[in-house]
Amino acid sequence: MKVYSILILNKAGGLIYQNEISSGLNKLSANDYLVLAGTLHGVHAIGSKLSQSISTTNNLKNTEELNSIQNSNILSFGKALNPNNNKSGLQSIETDFFNLYNFQTVSGLKFIIITSPNDNFENFETSNEIFRKLYILYSDYVMKDPFYSLDMPIKSILFDKNVKELFR
Amino acid sequence: MSDDSIIIPSTTTNSLSKLTINDYSKTGFGYNPSIGTQSNSINNIETSNLLISKKQIILSTSTIPIYEKLHLISKKSPIEEITLSSLLYLFSEIIQWQFKNSKNINDLEARLNGLGYKLGIKLIEMIKLKDGYKLLKRDTKILEILQFIHGPFWKFIFGKQADELEMSQNNNDEYMIIDNLPILNKYISIPKDYGDLNCCAFVAGIIEGSLDVSGFNCNVTAHTSTTDQHPLRTVYLIKFHSNVLYRENIRN
Image (cartoon, rainbow over all chains, first blue to last red; front, side):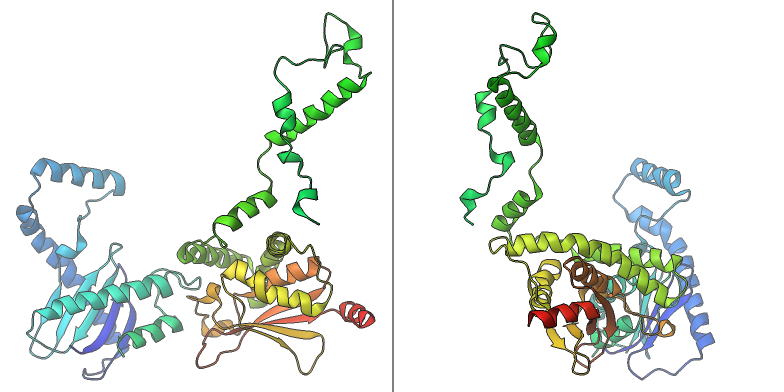
């Protein structure tokens, strides 16, 4: 599996990091990348609403328990939260030309990678491994950087360097 | 000096075993209503002895002194370790806090230096005590104190020795301590428009404080000097004041 590109979106759907790891995709203009990021964010949000009813019926927990969780969420955060953000919404897009995988962290940050197409199911496992490593790099080189302000574009040189090393 | 001859007041606990709660002097210790005002006076050897032992009791109830604690620690594990993440989150917050208050980059470096300075003054006493307690020796030469900073001092703070210690070829009052991977800078990337800011100005402050307080007045600055192998390589430039060099020359 060859990784073409990495996108990182903040919780509002803004593009904060974009890196072309290897050539293979057509270059888009900066504006188009922002539109792409916003679209994926929107699709994810709609998707999670679609699948919400499915995931609750599949859940083994009884309704009383679910209600109490929902209520405590509403009391503490002021809104209903989905207990697991990674079980709903857009997870992957698989086409003949590329595959796209999406991973959402607990704070709503999204990591998106675009890879070469492969109908092998193991791809999904590999993508999870990549996400895990990216998440580690993010929490080290971005979150511990005193000059980074939250939800703003990532300009860290060290993060850039380490991401490149990850895919070497 | 052998360890036996050192008298540590807090370990002299004999007085505790001798005294019981029913002990009182015939003439009284404190006011005794059956005797009257005389009871308050110290008029014989017995009472003054009792007073001394009373003093010892107060001392022995205090907590373990810092030098004994250090001994206890050094027996169990040579270096107390903390997690890197918590340290760097704290350091990151310190920088953000100082950054908010500072006018420009130089001001920020000066502030970080100042914070480190205060720490260095206190830290060198403890590390010297821990390291050189047996030798009881005070470093009086520039090279001696620099080797101490480069070796045990660095090892105590960062868990490893500094990588290089060099003397400037151009100026005889300048020395350099070089760290290939400064641990505080590990995750910090300086934005391009911030010039040559190096957050290890904090460490430079620690060095400056500890050298100043040991009688070697100097200015210490941190500079990034990137090499291919070590992108975060930091040079601490130590510039001694002229009076230190003058003193050094007299000694030689």
